[in-house]
Length: 97
Image 1: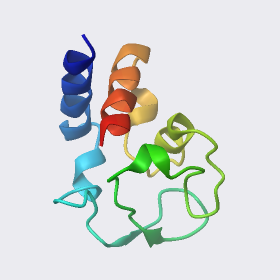
Image 2: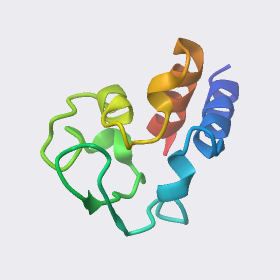
Image 3: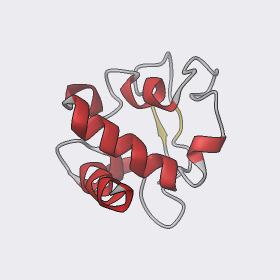
């Protein structure tokens, strides 16, 4: 069911090889540091609390969907290398936050 998919997405999020939780960490899911993820400069890592309700995403709104935001930027983790199922699970998890 959906709860299982959300749990699978959390596992993807927390996988060090994917790299989400390294920056999106702690109770607010941010390390409050500035990073350049390949979007023309270093910007503060945003909290992911209620992230699904806060689009468009990225500092300039260039990501029109949460999927676009996750896949954007060479320095933005390794989500762009996920297969379709793991990416869908990750998005389900983010939408649950």
